[in-house]
Length: 126
Image (cartoon, rainbow, N blue to C red; front, side):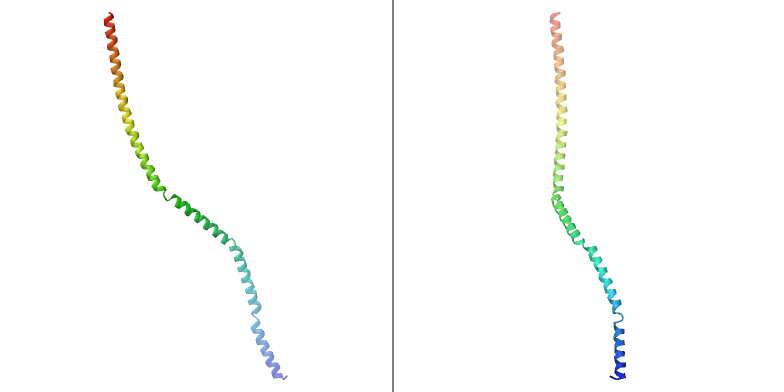
C-alpha cells in the first residue's frame, strides 16, 4: 500500500473519528433523558389509580344528585302541608276560643241561676 493510500485511509479514519466524537455525549444525553422519563413515569405511576378513584367519587356524587333531584318537589309538598296545618291550627284555636267564651257564658248563667235559686230558697224559708 502506498503512502497515498495510507494518507487517504488516515484521513477517512480521522473523518470517521470526528463524526463519532459527539456520540458519547449524545449517548450520555440520551441516558439522562431516559433516566428523567423513568422518574417522570415513577411519579405518574399512582395517577391511573387516583383517576379511577376520582371517577368513582364522581359517579357516587352523580348518584347522590340523582337521588336528591326529587327533593325540592317533596319539600314544596311538605311546606304546603305545614302551611295547611298551620291554617287548620289557627281555625281550631279560634273555635276553641269561641267555645271557651260560650262555656264562660253558660257558667255565668248557671251561677246566676244558682244565686237566684238560693235567693228563692232563702226567701221561702224566711
